[in-house]
Image (cartoon, rainbow, N blue to C red; front, side, top):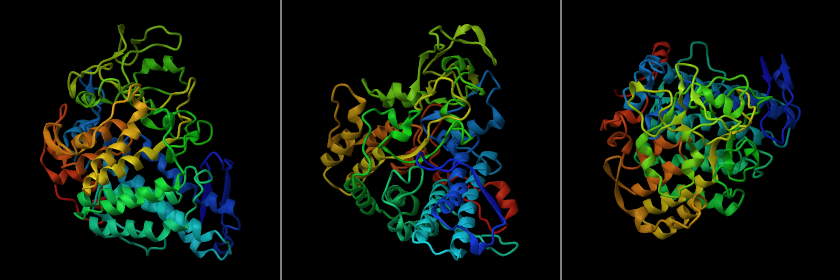
Length: 515
């Protein structure tokens, strides 16, 4: 059996390459460094999630971002982004297949290494700790699958028989599997957040389970907010993480120094390879290569902010400018940029406008605010130094606040948590009251209970991969709501993505989600 350990995760870990080839199973893994090296593929597979035509594109089904067709034909791409935005995706769409393959490849890597670990005869005190960590990492992939597709196969072993075709499990069965895997393994994990940077430890695994419980009612019809709140309390009391004083710190080039980030996908421009596609390439106009003196890359001017989403920002909220690039753009030397280059016009200034002419082809290459949450280092290459944020401490506080509201707790206790998170976004204190968070307000054109909290969640976690679940959780605003170029479908079947056609063709035991 052959595998290679390339980029070993974390700032505190050796980054040198080490290759294990044709080692008898009973000689596998004699020390901690070899156990860690073997786990690399399980974590490094996560980088693929951030690339083009993959998991990140599910954000385009929400009220935050969209890739309009530009200059009549650019970014048409077979109509996939139009379909995602309007909730008209098809089982034949390659993006769905890419997402499915990426997540199951991560599971396959976990199953393979688990098999090797469990069959190793080497006696080592921490062996079970690494087995538990792998099972939690595998549960993370299953969490993303249940969030996206709902009813999926569970494959929990490597040594499957020839011709094995897994069967579809119900969303409730998958939920139970993830819950059991996390519950059974969390207490075996390390409590040290520094030595496990970029890996699962006791605390971020608890937050993964809290996410599962937070969505239990909308996914399987069973409210589990008390269980979710208990986990948040355990993380808060442990005092392993803190809010950074600057909202931008978790997304900075040196964000490995953030005390807020709980789980990230590590990147290193010299050692890791891969790219956070939304870091720059899919959103910025190509002229902005001159803004950052970018090396070896091309900017595609694709994804933009949904114009109606910006109504969520109140006056004085610094998160607006820390999340989006707006208005006139400039080169590194301070000179104004023009929309020259690919399908551009050297006589038109590059100024990103909030308004976009339309979704189907009337948009131009400079319309729409652009994603700017991640710092771009001057002279950066196609691979960034920023680690991609999956989970941060602000989510713990906001999740506890939501659970307080949903379990009829004191709304002022919820408000204190929300205000703790949002306080760094304002120079002058601007607090929300418990009654504001508790109220039913109109959001995306329909009444939503706790709608002000939904609004705040969108602003705080914009483009962090959480929006689909948020919109579904809050009175199914995902299907009932309307936003720019998206009419309400009122079709709860679209809360799930379709099982990809390629997978249905390969496995006759799979069952398609309702269409």
